[in-house]
Length: 253
Image (cartoon, rainbow, N blue to C red; front, side, top):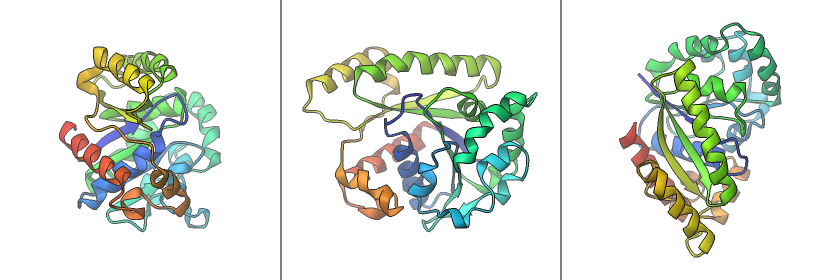
């Protein structure tokens, strides 16, 4: 049965989608079967895997509202062992639809149950908010990865996200675990970076991934080619760092 892991942070621009796409690709490249679910209405994870709108018969929105089974929304990507359930801007309307459902989370639970045996990992890219889509994703996940930049605004948002995780555990999913906190856009030469890392180690040292993800031009340009970094530039710093994080994630969950 697949392990289900969400990538979540209510703050935008922290490398959440980049991390979800690249860790998914790295693990799939190792020979494991991976399904990535794009739960962000921006659809960046979908386009980052080179999926054109013309290929989308159904999207994650159709799955959430019960219009189709998740199997009917899965698209095989050009990359080894990696499939995706795509998202479009239509997903923005799901926030309202989920409020209207008596048991909104049950729709996704039923949907995932039909494909869990087909994959080793299912990764969910959450939107940059703590709304119903994120709650829905966390309620069906075994664990959550929290990507964050080395800046104090990110530190301030951490407590809010952790409170949300506690609420999800209490109300919907008592087994939800924090897989790890992943530092992104890392620059070890900056004093601010050292200060933020020091603060994180005080409270979350056991949760920090050992390898941070450095700022990288090659990593930033890969989505414009519709390719994960391990295919766009397999020997780049970003690719090697995500390979280390993927290996550590597999050891944690």
